[in-house]
Image (tube, rainbow, N blue to C red; front, side):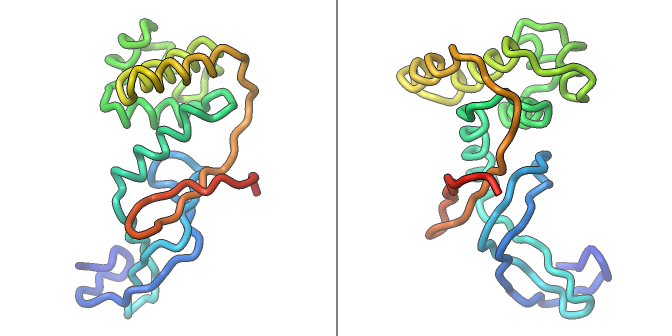
Length: 168
């Protein structure tokens, strides 16, 4: 393993990162707590060692589609990539023009309540049981407010858990 900052090759010191802003997922409001880190013995830079990233992204996607606010452009892009769709393919699944989805993801156009519901329903249809899909679609009937909260996660015995607490 080589340090991406100084190029050191060798053994890194294992450490713990108390709070880590996980922007690598494409969102700026995801925070991980108590995660492993690796410190370069040369430059002392600490890198996050994210355990079980696929499980984390699945949990994050579930939190996003069930939040009580309108989805953001970044969250729509995250959901699309989590499902493995290109913009054109996802626009087709949503029965929307690809240029609309492109403008929304680039924040050139606001997320409409209609697009918000469609994105959630496509995700839920592809990733959940019919019973959960029915329950979640019922929750989507009401209007959503704009806004977002931080998503905070931590690990417990090698499993990711969501920290349901008030926004900081």
